[in-house]
Each structure stands twice: as C-alpha cells, then as structure tokens.
Length: 100
Image 1 (spheres, helix red, strand yellow):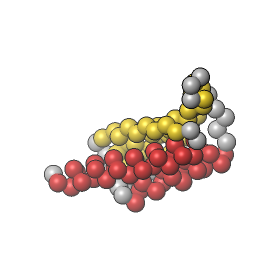
Image 2 (cartoon, helix red, strand yellow):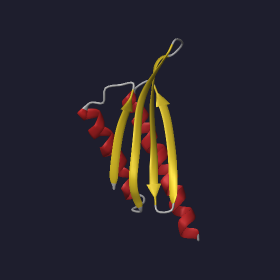
Image 3 (tube, helix red, strand yellow):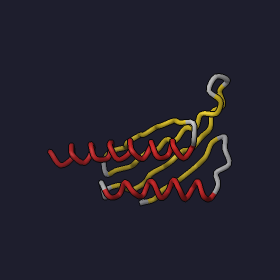
Image 4 (cartoon, rainbow, N blue to C red):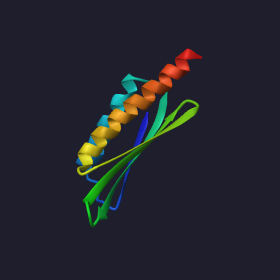
C-alpha cells in the first residue's frame, strides 16, 4: 500500500508526515485490498474560529474509491478523527463486498 501525504497552506514536517502514514497503515488490519491512500492536510484561517485544520483522505480499494474528510482545532486530532472515519468506511465497504 502506498501512502502519499501532502500539505496545503502549511509546512509539512517529517514528524507530521510519519504520524499520518502510521495512522493510515492501521487501516490495513480491516481490509487488505487497499492499493493507495492519498492524504491532504491543510489549514484554514477564519476570523470567528481561528485556525481550522483539515485532514482528508482518498482511499483506493479494488474497484472503489472512498473519500474521508475531517476538521478539528488540532491537526493531530483531525488525523485521529479521520482514522476513525476511515476504519468505519472501509469496514462498511468490506461488509458490503462480502455479502455479494
């Protein structure tokens, strides 16, 4: 599985990149048909909320593309929340695939 991490409007450090890759590789426990995961990390500055961190991922599974997006006040929290959503979506995909 390839994991591609990119950043928008922020400097992507090695620690942040490794953290995102480590979290994405945990999804392999639930489905081993994943070929690639693209992660986009970004920061949006708003007047009312301050900095809002976005973490989005596109998961390429055999025959399907799964999109996940999450936002939080901390980038690490957004990545953790994104992982929870990824696990739910991949598990749902696997259950539907096994029913066929």
